[in-house]
Image (tube, helix red, strand yellow):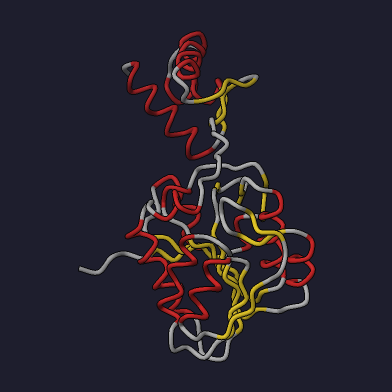
Length: 249
């Protein structure tokens, strides 16, 4: 097997399994241990993986958080498709939670004329909901400047008094092993509480969030249903937790 073919195989296995041992690669690729170790060293130098004792593991970058304005202009078409699919799930007379975030914000026009109550920690969300004459409860607390999300102890305590038919959450990062993560501790706690207080929790995400990790864990991967537009080969294991929305032409 040529060097580039070995590299491709190793990277593919790392992405699918997260870790792999030198011995497994020796047995599968039929090359010497010294050759496999050189391959792993080179791939680590290329930023493709991280060497560990006896093998290698997948390299993940810790994501940072964009502002609300920066998020708004990214992956707009995906967000609108996801938002419409999520809004279609909502039935009359439900009480739902809309997490702060640009994809959940895109849901709001599709909720018009539904007889529902919406609880939210998103300041822009509450404004648009009331403009559309949707019954709205805005949680109280501290406003986070860059995302316009309401966070803090007061908001957490208030939300803990409610029960939701469904909760729709934004999420910064999704990893099939680590779960759902976000950069901000207080926003992570708000999402945790929402998941605990709902019958059904949904994470609305464009495909760019898969395979990334942020600072604070929100929950395990099986705690929510994911709504997205595409699921890559690497994330096929999430198929039973995912509603994949494809654009109709």
